[in-house]
Image (cartoon, rainbow, N blue to C red; front, side):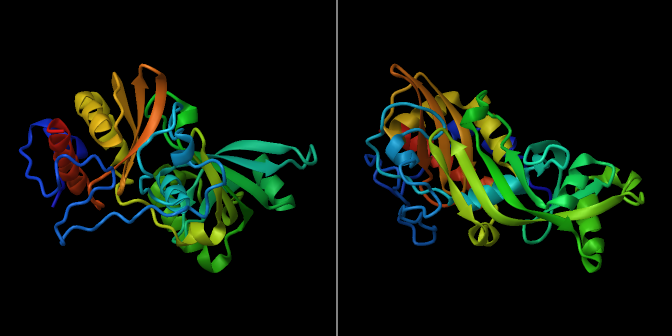
Length: 317
């Protein structure tokens, strides 16, 4: 059965009738439905991957800059989960290898990649390419993957750098690497069998995640490997674009009601199973905020339902 697109699911967001299970006077951004059938958003806990002194809650600078918010900390995915989501969504990264010609200098390349079942990047590269010759001499490399800019500010969007060793895919695993790579890049069938092309894999040894202004930290390889992409990953961009294009007034209401911030304009910059980030234009300048969903969601349908409920609640506050 074909599911409706995210745009259709969200198209009549502000018009749906709402029934409340929560106290409509509550402005707690972590408020959850009391329906025992709903999955409660976990209480916020310190993120072991986040560098000290750079918490988005403390600095009030996630996806923007401005004054510190008086609202309580808002639950959000770990850096490991967000890193996995970005790498899952990405198709092309910036590969940095160590130059053979200029010892110690990084050498940058535009690099399409696939992902194996463990989230290791897979590359199809030619021995004629300088980056291939570089990794054959020294496998230490990094791959930068960035979030498409959804709000006009590339420094306010997320990015992740994977550090690891790039080595040839072992012979017994080449068939699987070929299958997953061709599934992502169908046109590569025209050169995949050339003698000078081979599959290489990055074995990740460390990860650095940046989630916007003032949100950054290291993620260990074990945390990266154990993380999972967000369930809204495949539809997040469509949800964000639709909300920003068709529901700007609703975003202003949500920022006022659930973040306690008066603003003239609000732009959604990211969305995940626990909530979303916004960038706001206020009388004091541009700032960012995190708004939690009333309950954890696992699909675009569930996200739409909770947003409809939140908009209705915000109108009555």
